[in-house]
Image (cartoon, rainbow over all chains, first blue to last red; front, side, top):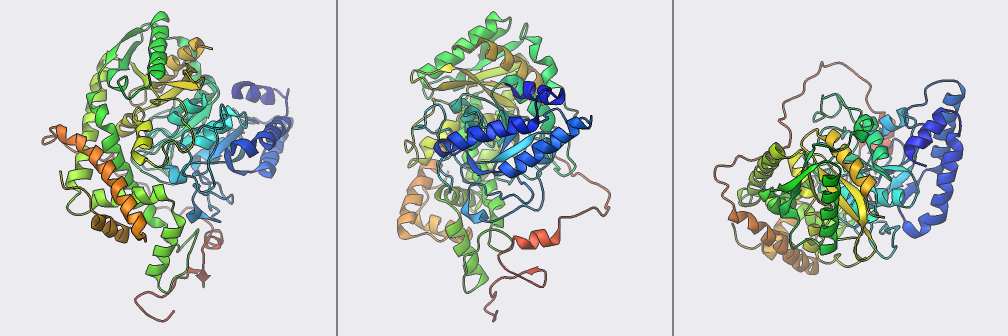
Length: 473
Length: 100
């Protein structure tokens, strides 16, 4: 059953939230030992929340648009009193004293959180292999990675542990795992969803977004979590459209551009073929399809891997063993801080902190960080030019299908290249989503990325719904 | 752009970032950071002289609100997370060489 159908059945009193949640908890109990999607399953809290929804229904009160729908939360979203680890040893034992805005909104909408999902430490990675608690496995083939950094949230939906989940996307961390696990993943316009209570990685790029098994469920979840929040100064004041209402409007007359720069040699031929088929399907459905050019997208990876680490090196300075989390003792405070950070952070996080510190340091700032910020301007300009000709753009979500454990773990640059198609969107602050569209030569899912201009979620979801309907079996 | 990152550069940024690295790690990080920074040299092909920098995707302005007292987070809940506390404060080891 879809999330929309589950909520309808609970609201109508046809099914109890408790029975639904118990069913999903049973699936988790059976398959979680293989998949390891979760850092923590909050079964008791989930049952209590489900009972509260059922009580509301019994009393004739409105239980909310996601009444009784189980949802899994990426473990970098703050949950009051419930451990939030970012899959890092440095946050050992931390229980946030407040809920993220999205967590509050989900609870108010009647959704039932079933647990906190695994991620690459502090959302830095593309495979969940950087988790301090061990990797998540791809439910479609446990020998392969689920992608990352929101690998646990993608796997949770793909494995049927929850019909919905939330992730965060700084350079592709929702869309890439969605593609690799064969589910829908949405990175909304920067500022559409409040970042209050999302543990910061790169503040000018981070955005929370939904995972779902289908486009309509993802649209409904985005409706629930989007909206202005006075606690996030970058929060958009624009009213939130009802994305679910326009999903069936089709693509007749829509102008769709395939990003030629993201269809080149670095993309596996079977993935490229699926994107071409997706474009043909949109054309058959009434869209005008053409070739779009975003030349600066080619330089997105270079700009991103200076800007994101630079922001991260600053954001992660707060983990010093003083106020929360791990403390490794030392004779002086300076020694304590150094020992805490050295033991608390994993290798990828250290790598990015050092890279960012270097890019920002005296003598290198202009050559690296400064240059990257200018390239960011070019990317914004090139997208703006492309969107004068097209309503939405199309590309692969990831260059390949899911790869095997260890394949890229020793080569950071090869791992970073898995984000080459998703990064430009984050630098431009625009929305994009991954829609499953058949499988590759290895039988693993392929995701097609639909990109849209700032606050262009409505046409993005419309195109995605048409792609979903035409996806090869 | 500048010369390749050296072992000394990596040792220096590790110190700035309050991270301790072993000699082996220093070798590995130097070569890995070198590869990433080398990739970033593709930006040298672009003419960026007249391009303004973008720090943020939104045209940000300061957001103001009335300075009204609202509920804060619970002090006991916050302090319960601290590795060490004393008299409702965070306790740390000695600083500046003084006795703890």
